[in-house]
Length: 226
Ligand code: SAH
Image (cartoon, rainbow, N blue to C red; front, side, top):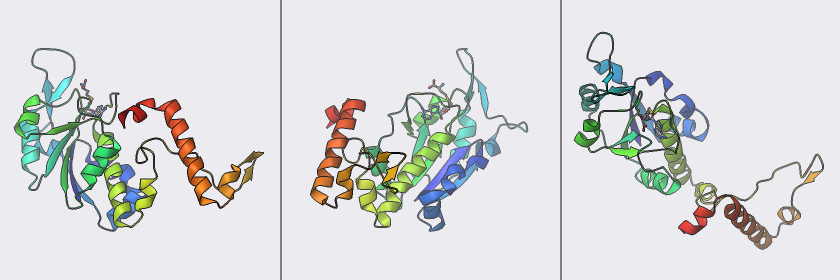
C-alpha cells in the first residue's frame, strides 16, 4: 500500500507512524509513503499557498492552482482523500474497507488555515473524510490516524494475527471487555477468578457479558446500529 501525503509540513511524516507495528510494517515494505511539500508549488518566492476568502470573512483558504499543481505532480494518485470535518466520520468498517486492497494507493490531502478551495474537491472528485467532531489545526494528524488504523488492520491480517484485531472494540459489535495481565494480585486488587480458571467456555461468556454491559452503558448507539 502506498500513500502520497500532500502537506505544508512534510517533516511531520512519518512522525508517529515510525513506531510500533505500523513502523515495523513500513520497514517490512507493507506500506510506503511520499510526503509532497505543497509549498514547492507556491505561486511566489515567499511560498504562498493560501489567499483571502472570496465573500469576506476571517481566515485564509488554500489556493486551487497551487493544490492542482501539487496533485498533478503525483503520477499514480489512486483515491484522493481530503481530511475535513465535513466528511463522514472514519470508523472501523471504513478502515477495513480501505485496508482490503493491499496494493491500493491513497493520496492524502492535509488542509491548513480554513481549508481548501471547493473547486479542487470538485475537479479531482475528492472524498472528504473526518476523524471526529472537533476541529484540528491541520490535516496531518488526521492523515496519521488514517494510515495507522488502515495499516494496522492490513498488517495483522497479512501477518496472520487476524484474531487480535477480530477481538477488538467495534469489531465485536461493541466495546472490549476489561483486560488483565500479571501479577494476578496487585495492591489488593485481584484478577477476576474466572480468567484464572482455564475454563474457556466460562471465560468467553464472561467476556461477552462484560462487553455487552460496557457497551450498553457507554455506547448504546453501537447496539442500536446493529
Ligand atoms: N474551517 C474548517 C476547519 C479548518 S481546520 C471547518 O470549519 O470545517 C484546518 C484543516 O484541518 C482542515 O482543512 C482539515 O484538513 C483539518 N481538520 C480539522 N479538523 C478535522 C477533522 N475533524 N477531521 C479531519 N481533518 C480535520
